[in-house]
Image 1 (cartoon, rainbow, N blue to C red):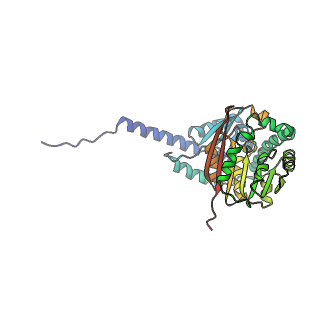
Image 2 (image 1 turned 120 degrees about the vertical axis):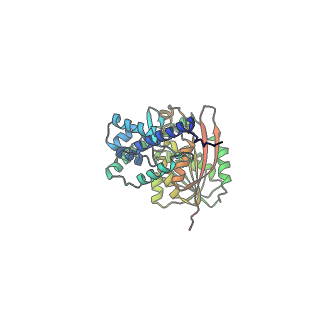
Length: 339
């Protein structure tokens, strides 16, 4: 008997998977094969922008830009989030199980090396100023009522015990310098004076900083310095801290990604960044009522910004509130200087 070798034909499932892989690879190549789309990806390097903001930066009509954004979204290179009536775009986070991760990573690394033209930088700065002014305008008008408005979302007492537990777990000495950005009326800061001797209150709203001073003074607290400005002002004064706190503040800041970078520069080696903020939500009324720019944050976004800023992700704690909001407490640590 003569034996015959039978060659196995590919199964229908394998054929489908191969075709699907090639189709996705085609979409990916198409997405990268355009100068304007690469420009968009460069702009989204560490920031998210709304469609109209991208139109202003690039000097292009919304109808033309939407076509390019759709191609990038189809290829899963960018993702969207709704902020009120606007759609904001950001780069999709690269997943370990993405079969195209190396391709995306290689191209995006090359794109990121491209310097931004000066006119583009000016337009970005203009948009960031507009965002910041929106927040400052709210606090100028509502400084006397801010505590009441903030109470619509959460009271400090609702999570005070939890935040102090997190800080205690970091084993920071009482001689360490603590920097709180946007201390509000100073409730947390006044509590921290009982544990730490060197504290700095940094706020870009003169009205809110005066409210904080009043709280500290009436509580007869010592060891607090007050600084008017944002994190860039603190950097210009070479301030260094062992613990930097952003307590219910990040959603008021126009450029969260840059805030992470500034925080990293303001921290001593081994220092900690403590973010206390809202998890992602869809309650748009907080924009007008509380002056929020962002509707909370995804955990993955905070992790991404922290990683880009040379910060290691640490412990996390979450607290759900009765009104549907959730508070997240996230610790990021500046990597020890290898030298």
